[in-house]
Image (tube, rainbow, N blue to C red; front, top):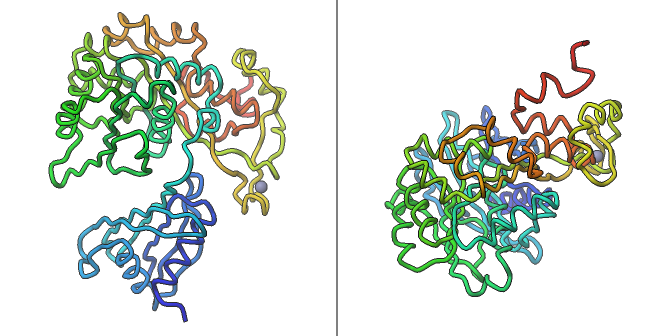
Amino acid sequence: MASPSERLEELLRAAIGEGASDLHLEPRDRRLEVRHRIDGRLISRGFVEARFSDSIIQAAKIAGHMDIAERRLPQDGQGEIARGERRYHLRFSSLPAVNGEALVIRIIDEHVGVRTFAEMGLFPPDIERVRELLSLPHGLVYVTGPTGAGKTTLLYAMLHNLPAEEIDALKIITLEDPVEARHPRFFLQLGVDERIGRTFSELLRHVLRHDPDVLLIGETRDLPTAEITLKAALTGHLCFSTLHTPDALGAIERLKDIGLDPLMVASALKGVIAQRLVRRPCGACARPHPEDQRLRQRFAALLTAAEGPGSFLQARSGGCPACQGRGYRGRTAIAEVFPLAGLERLVAQAAGPAALLPRLRARGCATLFEDGVRKAARGLTTLEEVHAAVERPASNGSCYLPSACPPP
Ligand SMILES: [Zn+2]
């Protein structure tokens, strides 16, 4: 019979085989439920019988180099596993629930190549806008969105797309909590550890003495971090960071709210990007949307600018064998990429979307919702996914599906 550690390996290999980003082990009654997070959704993969539950959790804590005697406090751990030729980094996290310990194991493929902007799902005009931001000698660019919106993936793709002739000649330092994928070839990567006082702001002070050209600050959580980042951007460094605001322009208001000088923000902030990940309908079972033609009319103003063929699709509920019943396979990004050059005066006034959006649209920029509709019109995602991922601006009307619209 398989040992607990062998059974844990089986569970991990099954999760990796399905392309899961996380393996969840949760106590239910006395059994342990096994769930995989695939394309952002949790999918149940059955139960470990009660008599093996404790030993599987123990095996996982050993694999994560955690304290197996400590069952009352949350713990973090690290480990790794091989599957075929590939090695995977594992990040463990335990929580003491009332009916037993719950564990989540994040699976990180360290050798996954950095994806191109096109592979991530950016449309060519947005790729061009991002490249322009990357060619700036200094300044600050924020990527915004909730957890799980692919902000870090986008930031790493950006770093790898710094002008090729320069990347070898630049000193690039990243600060992350924690460091996920490792890229030692070009970057000096530092992990934040708040328990020992190694915070973003504390590390930043020291990092600046290392004469960096480009800085990636994983997350702007507080005023000290924001202030140092802003000063770095104003003194010749190119800085990238993330903020938890729902849309790109929300970053401007957030920076003012946390207490930064709007004039300094206006001169440092070169661009804001918001991103979401939406699921792609399964190519084997998705069908054309029955209201494709009416949707094209409804969004005619947006779609004239979208090049290329395609149609609105509907994912099939219940899916097919190719998508293992999910109806969707893989994800794509929808984004709003807003360069702020020439808009400094409005940024200094912390002007809202009503003032800024018309100027950005005049340059061809699309909002998250608009970019999502354009991608849905080409079958790259579905309107349902866009609707679920983006809070639709009121100006877009009260309905987005013709069949859901009240009669005129
Ligand atoms: Zn399918």
